[in-house]
Length: 151
Image 1 (spheres, rainbow, N blue to C red):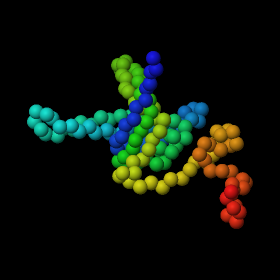
Image 2: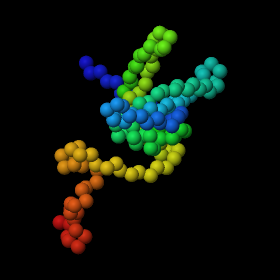
Image 3: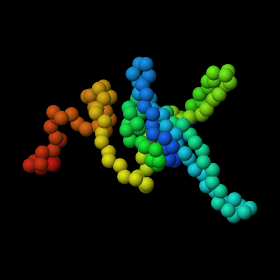
Image 4: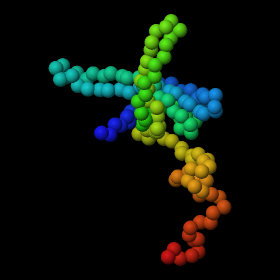
């Protein structure tokens, strides 16, 4: 039996991402997302609405990109896994919360425009020093010369 823990939400960022670094130097960013639900009450025929506030955590390059790209109020789609964290307060009370550990964060182009710039290639990501889908190294020749026949 396959178990999957993937969730996708779309909502508005409730606060600027806070970028921090672990003692080992790993970037981590966190921000909140407000997700609205709207439905029609069948008895009163009135529209009703509820808002859920969800914390999002991003790691590594995604954390740095989110911190640079997401602002309070930005419409985002977040895909990741649900994670429950528990801790004890200074008063000895047990607390827990559920958050999303993001695999991907996307800006909604329905409500805004975005300028895209690629990250620098990571070493070892694609075997030749390029990340998948990244730009070709500067010293490589183009696959097709304009003054040549393509076939």
